[in-house]
Amino acid sequence: MDEGKTMQVTETQAEGLKRAYTVVLPAADLDAKAQDRLVELKDKVKINGFRPGKVPVAHLKALYGKSVMAEVIEQAVTEANGKIVEDNKLRLALPPKVALPEAEDEVKSVIEGAADLKYTVELEVLPAIELGNFKDIAIEKPVAIVSDEEVDETIKRISDANRPFSAKEGAAASGDRITVDFVGSIDGVPFDGGAGQDIPVVIGSNSFIPGFEEQLIGLSAGEERTITVTFPTNYLSAELAGKEASFAVTAKGIEAPGDLAIDDEFAKTLGLESLDKLKENVRERISKEHEGATRQRVKRQLLDALDAGHKFDVPPTLVEQEFEGVWNQVQQDLTQQNRTFADEGTTEEDARAEYQKIAERRVRLGLVLAEIGERNNIQVSDDEVTRAVVERARQFPGQEQQVWDYYRRNAQAMASLRAPLFEEKVVDFLLELANVTEKQVSREELYKEDEEKAA
Image 1 (spheres, rainbow, N blue to C red):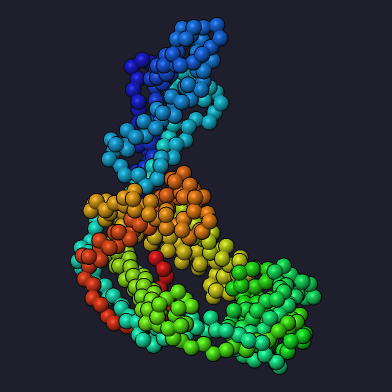
Image 2 (image 1 turned 180 degrees about the vertical axis):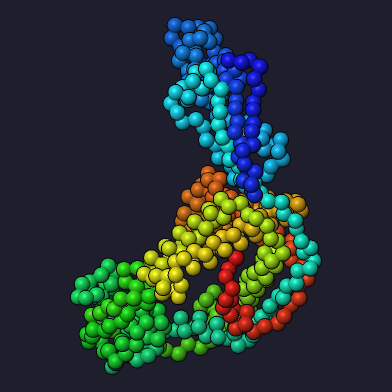
């Protein structure tokens, strides 16, 4: 072994955002570090026949030499990679990809300290991002005022859901509540989840499979009827989606809806002191819904502007990872809905190309937002993350402690909460700088379907 050797680094690739290096770590350095580690172990290990701290290093090497050298190699590789990054002033997009020797005799020689360690490391770096002038971004903020009619319609729906029913003679009509037993089958074979007993159905509520409720009209208590419906193609169960099913239905009882006055007494049944308080409560709830829709429309415009104003190469592996996540979800959704790409009016090839663009956009915008946040010292505090965990736990009544423990023990889960908080803070920062003008719109305009792809 040559005692005078030092670490050698040779760059083998520098194309785009990819870098690759061949690294040679001298055997003498690795052996010296292993010796130091074994000396440290002298005072820590207990071996029969030796007093504490008196175990010969040679004996320790015979017992633990291979495992100690493995630890030394791992640490040395990490330190060497860190030095490469620091010396070349690189900003990594992903952890280094290391390829150690695979040949058994080569590995043995390195572990025994008889040969230098030669390995390769591939790095993917972040691009240099030149940020635009955010004051040049023009945003039109759609604002929908909550109308009295909208409040009244919402309260009407609430009252309909709380309307009293009373038994009636004769046949069921639209608006009546009919209690039924039913057994569903496809091609004469009953299917899981297709049977029910004493199930109340309000005819016209559209809460059952399309066509089911309408065919209950005319039934009287005690009467039986077989009805046929077709499950929607986007039904949650892929086994049932798009299939025709027959239901043997038995009517158990018919109830007619009663009148329900929308007044102070009605408001009190909902836990509010008066009708005016109910209207105020409903208006606030609708207003928050409108604000949420406005936020999404404004954010979309902002992200579109950022995407248009920042064009640079993105780390290919990050795009690949993002695409795989998106594509897996697309395939899962199609499977659940029992649909194909042809049903969506496209081909798998075209869909792949489209979702590849979406993945690139997401990665590019993520890098831009991260750069803006870093340059402007935008941070998410631990307290903010803790509040997000508490809010998430509240969504699971009775399981709050389990949810809390899951997030507190799972760094990746905590990061999944921190990331959207950071994004929203950067968006707020940008909206303060952008040229935002308000435009009053109707509720229909605010909620109209946006044909552009989501960011």
